[in-house]
Image (cartoon, rainbow, N blue to C red; front, side, top):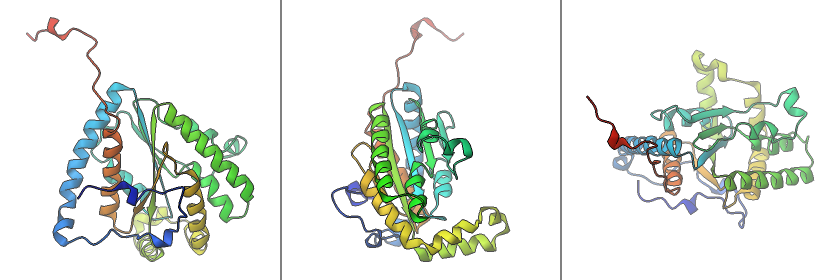
Length: 272
C-alpha cells in the first residue's frame, strides 16, 4: 500500500461527522494492487509480532485497540486475521455484552477499567464502554443530557489511560446496510454460523439510521489527540484487516520501543 494519510480516516471533533458521506469500500485499486495485499499483510504481521515482543519485554507502554461497529462488521474476523501470528504472551481480547446485575450496580466504566491493559500488554476490546452511549440512546432509556455526561466521563477515562502510558486506538468498522444483509443471510445459510444469529441483529437493523446518528455523536464527542477515532471501510474484509494492521504498526512504531538491557552480565556466561 502507498503511505497512508491517517487524517483521511481520523474523526475530527471540529467537523460534523456524517457516516453516509464516508465510503464503506476502499478507493479505486487495480487488481495488481489487490493481489499485493496478502504479501503486505504478511509483512505487517511480522512487524506487529516484533513490536509486540518489544512492548511485552520493555513494559513501559501498553496499547488498547477498541473495535466497534454494527453486527457483522467484522470485529471477530478482524481480531483473528490481524493477530493470527502474534505471540499470545501479553495479548488478550475482551468482549463486552449486556451488563450483568453486579455491573449494573456500578458506574458504567467499572467493568471496563478492570480489563484495560497493564504496561507491556496489548488488549483488544470487542465492543466496549461505547455500548453505553449507543444502545441506551437508540432504545430511549438514557437522557441525552446524561449521554453527554458519559461522553465527558469517557474523555477523562481515556485521558487517564493515555497519561498512564496506554496508547488508545479506536476503530469504527464501517459497513453498509447492503453488505450487512449479505452477511446476515450467509449466517442463516451456514449451520456452523447459526450460533452467531441473534434476534437483536435484526432488531438493530430496523434502527440503522438511529445507530448511525448515535455513532456519529459518540465518535465526534470522544475523538481526541489522546484517543482518536478512525473510520475503517469494512465492506472489504481484506482491506479492513490491512488498514487496522497498518494503524497498529504505525502506533507501536511511534512509541519508539526498545528492548530492555539484560539484567545479567552475559559475558560471564559461556556455552559448554
